[in-house]
Image (cartoon, rainbow, N blue to C red):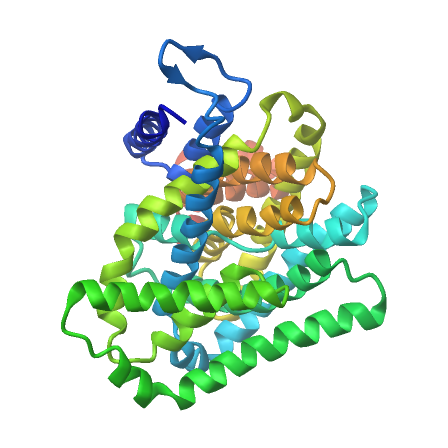
Length: 420
């Protein structure tokens, strides 16, 4: 404990290095933070006064990581708020249902046929279903697609996923944390979680005028302490009834997002979200022994391939139904392919509940693969479409037509197809 401050400084230096490298390549910081955490940890060496094992500081880093989860979901709730969810269009609800349904079933049956028990199967299905809002937003911004026709639908589906996440995370946290095994036990756990969610939202909307007055605080320091007190109290209250603390944070964000102080809260929480959020991914990496990943490699690769197929099919179904082009539909699938913070949050339940140890390495590798693949596939979506069209046209063309076709006409045909 003599070098506590030094170890925390070393951890922050490693986090900063990982983020600089990620930004240098224009990629999400999530996989880099997880990797840098996996590289160090209990198996790493101690060099002079620099202890890369982080044995003394691991509990503190882990706790700050938990705070990062609260800030991430609190901010997400502030951005979404209940009114935005209610106003979500019919196409978003239908599209989100199709997207979640396809990806959830893929994850569920993948885990089931690989012999996982029910609790682990439900966790893995959640890990493979929810997109990363942070990575999705980064892709749209970095590739200047915020004005694209498919962007509104992408953002709408991520918002719909947030609603699903709230209910699903509450349900499985009630099951795995309370160790409910019977149908009655599962129903009771789910009922308590549902009552907590609905009760918080209803009370919050009813008390909006009161909340507007309570948080009308001129002093910045009193304002921030009051908001954070509410955040930790509601999250802690949820945890006492076996509802994941992250859900309490999300619910508070949804409620306070309705108040007249929502923008002030958003600007206030961003630095805390970024700082403690980076510590969360780093601490998750610290909990993974890289030498134990062998058993999870093929599972992660298999799940990643199936997820790629699932999001492509879902993107085409959702996009084409709303009259979008094939390229725009591919953009929907490839952008939503990104997995990150929410998959890790769901996987952390397995560790808390003492489920099979392979779940966390599986989630780490799965997130690493898709968090890296999604930006690349999204960037090259038009090229992927062009190559696919050329291959399909080549197979469709009869041999005699191929012999008679002139190069110029062939290229023109490709151009015409691409434009369509």
